[in-house]
Length: 125
Length: 90
Image 1 (spheres, each protein chain N blue to C red):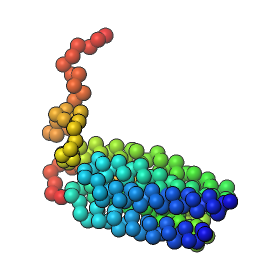
Image 2: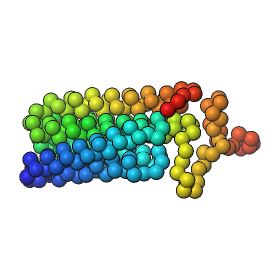
Image 3: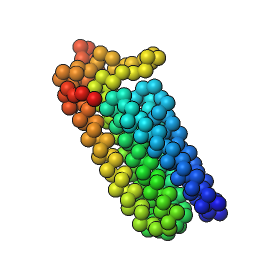
Image 4: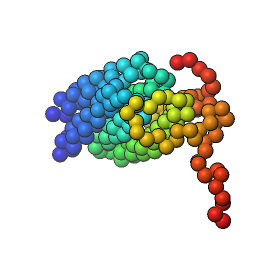
């Protein structure tokens, strides 16, 4: 039973990591590549670490595995946000089929100011 | 069955590492390379975990912790460099 669960978690994790790698090669622009790596890659690594916890079935190993999974799940979105924001501000081109870009024209590359679009309006209070 | 699965997952991760390395070498610009590097960090964590199962040595999990930390710090550092780094040539 434990072996079956370990096998399933390992194969699922490995498959997700492979999907993430295929996505990072096949996707046309940076944000779509991040879409593949940050979700599938993170979940793949987390599932393989979970497989280790199930395989050893000891308190010390499970605690460390849980810490790794928690750390990965907490830091992956932060890192993805940082790199996505930085790349947009650095002017990395979006895919030519992109239909909506809400940030266009709202960032001043000279003084690194991001405008919300509400600067000129009256304060409601 | 577990041994077979471990070998299969090693093969998958090898293939994934090759694909991620292709993107790392190909670019087209620095942020894409950073994303590929982040993926490689995740893949290394997966490799370490699978090897811990294969070898039966649980201490390899500590390597995964350190790799995860390093990957996060590297990505945040690169992001800061890309955003505030000024003119550059990649």
